[in-house]
Length: 260
Image (cartoon, rainbow, N blue to C red; front, side):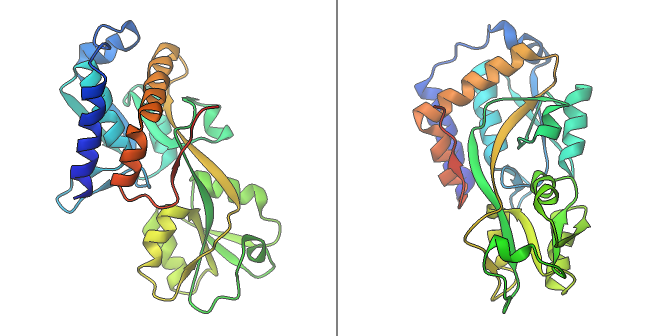
C-alpha cells in the first residue's frame, strides 16, 4: 500500500510540473543513455518490498527525475554499504548515489543540499539502565555499529569511553545487541525503530547523539548534473511532494530539510 501512495505522490508532482527537462543540456548524457542509474544501499531511503520491488525515497525521487527527463528506465544499483556506492558514483557506474552527507564522503563526491533530516540515536535492550545518549558513553559499554555508515563515523568522533563493536550490515549489527554482545545499537532513528519491533521490551532513546542530513551524491566532475538534481529537489520540497513521499513510506522521525 505504501508503494502505491509513493507512486501517486510521484505522479502528482510530474503532472503538476510538466516536463521541461528533456532538453536540459546538464543531463544530456543520461538522457542519451536512456536510463538513470542510482546507487543505493539498505537504509531508510531504500528497501525492497515482499516481491523484491524497490521502495523508499531513493526510487521515488529517481522515478520523478526519469519522467521529467523522458527516460524510460531507472536502474537500481544496490550495494551492501555506502563506501561501495561512493565507488560506484566515482567510477561512473552510478549516475548518482543516495546517502547521508558526511565531510569524509564530501571529500570524494559532491552533494546536493540536504533534502531530509533525521537523527542518530541508540537502541537499547529490555531492562537497560541507559536512558539518554550521554549514558551510553561510559566505560564498559559496547556499542554495536555498522562499519562505514555515517552514523558510525559520527559515533567514533564522539565516543570517549564506550567501545564500538562492528558488523558489516544492519542485521548482524542488530544481532550483536540481541545476543548480549553489545549494550546499545547506534544508527539512524528510523532504522532502529524498525529493529526494535524484533526485540520486545527494547527502547529507542528519545534524544540523539547527532542530527544528520541526507543528500544525493554525484561525481566531482559532474557540476552541471549537481545543479540539475539540486534544483529538482528544491521543487519537490516547495511543492510538498517530498513530504508526501516521506509520509507514504511511513518514515517516522524523518523530516523534509527546507532551505533557508
